[in-house]
Length: 341
Image (tube, rainbow, N blue to C red; front, side, top):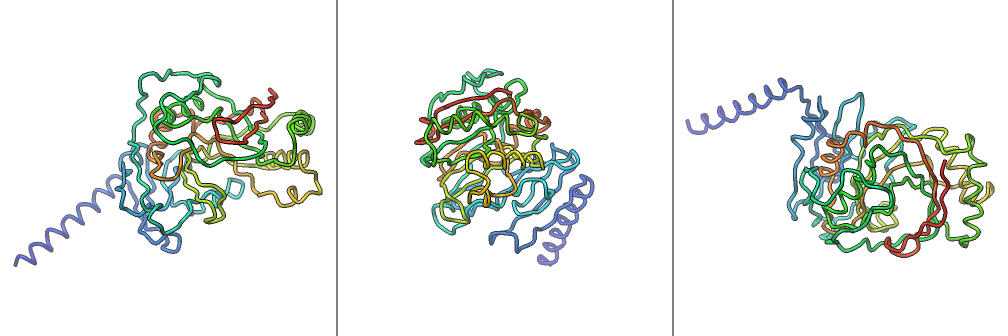
């Protein structure tokens, strides 16, 4: 009798849960096991941003296996959390395969923990608007990013709405004790080690005259947000770092403009031009961190963008392009030249 009573109670709970799902309009489905990393994951399309936000896990313990990275996407004005490998972005949107979290069954990666709450409350000392030049570290609690980039790079500086991109960078730097990125940007070309500074400046200043519209084409509103971790040598990655980003889509004009940069800096007959990675994967990074026990989380980024809607709702013009030297650690990056459109 005890066994029968227990089974009846269990069945009632299952039926109650199903009824709640129906009433709330939630639809739960399991992912294709072939797309998972050996652990169970679920994908839940949400009828509203509030529902999506309310049932995300706030944290995971230090001993749990990290779940498959998830991405917040916007489709038909609805938000949903997707398995990182789900192919739901159109062919003209950026493929994110190259930024997949490096999967390696090791104690180091399995010990990654998320300690960032779903909170967008601004700490004291952060102004509502920030100028591009006001981004500065407050009190570093994390070791500065150890990975060092190299060479000259070209950044696309995006239009801002009440300094929303600068505010996001400063917010995550201040709340997590991170070194802030020196300027909001989308990287168009990086790792140019074959030029000296004067050569790079000369070629850089010729860019506007080669672009079809004499300026870089605008970006439509972001297609998603991403928090990811890379480990050098795993899944084709070349660095050890964690980062958060706003992900943009590419299009024919963007691809043509990137081709123009490769033609200017490498030559149309060069190996670099012939083998450049396509499609272009434009994204605006919000924060960088070392991968061990990273303080960055998808939940924290989602919470912030939900409370700062211009980040995801607005298309953006490219207001300027800038040439940077990325030799050395991030604190030593140097602005070389800048062209305002």
